[in-house]
Length: 71
Image (cartoon, rainbow, N blue to C red; front, side, top):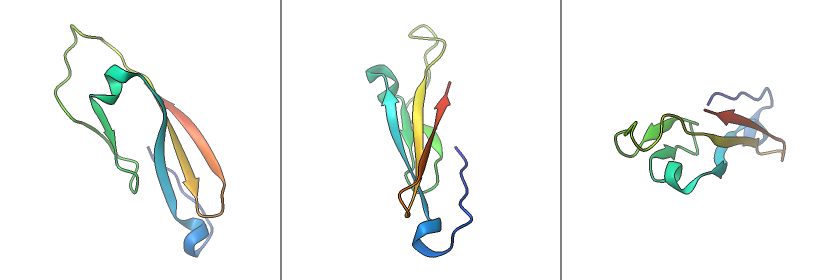
């Protein structure tokens, strides 16, 4: 999940966190809080589900944030 901030210093530093996720998806997907990269913790099994949804928040050092739905 990409996010940018035009501020300099700590206010321009963007961190990421998962805000909403199902229990099943939390066992599969991992989020790097520094880069926003979403990776698989295990292989996907389409018999378990053919889509997953999570909400990722990007927040900067100045206290501003925004969220994105990832499907």
